Length: 325
Ligand code: DGY
Image 1 (cartoon, rainbow, N blue to C red):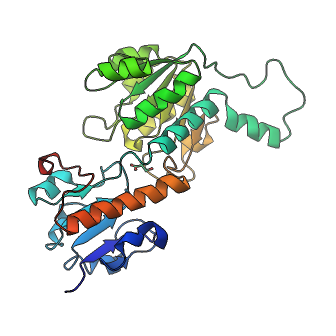
Image 2 (cartoon, rainbow, N blue to C red):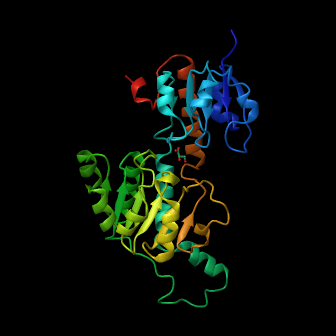
Image 3 (cartoon, rainbow, N blue to C red):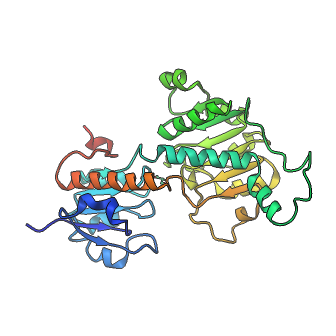
């Protein structure tokens, strides 16, 4: 019997996807540009599985061109690149990769928080550019962490992992989510707050919510103006949770003090984007999960989801709620 055809949109190290060997026929896309390469699109009609990245759009049109598809496996925990209702209507399971990137992403959120609090980018550039003339008692002053308040928008796995790290730095912790989580409150010493309360009282606001219709531009001109002028915004979730133009104004005009972003909207930002000119904005190229271990585990989990879907078994991590019953 012929092996099922799987479209893998981006090349991956063979050892990360070794479980697919001998079980599927792989057609692999190029490293760039992102998305489904034309030579993959030609085979949509035959494909039984898709192994994709967060940069690949799986929408209704693509699904219609793939009548034999039995599973979509996304190598990411976020899945806003996929039309889930359209997949569910076809009873097409979609897999994601939660858990294995939690620590890596929380570490990066904390790295951005520390670097933004202490103005590390500017300080390092000043040193390199010869502006470090002497030890200055009033030079390169940053924010204190101990006793300050960190507000977590979203207390899922990554939000909780950031909370664990923050406790070690003596930060007070607030969180907001769709509902209070009493077990997490006692385990992590976090306190529930309304979104509004959290914005008004936090010295650091870190975003850990998925991108959805409700969270798109959750951070906008109005909500940025509610934050403290001394506060720092950290985003390791999805760029579009923040209204980019409003953030430019907020950082330029001092509505908030600084931002540390691992994700932007659009992604990537054009090199001449105004955010890159702002000394109080630190931007990383969506590297939250970019550790050797996390990325390998994400690929392995994506393989498990893919194989389960092809073999008609429940996916270890299936995101369509209606297909999980
Ligand atoms: C994810 O998996 O959704 C992350 O954004 C990847 O870094």
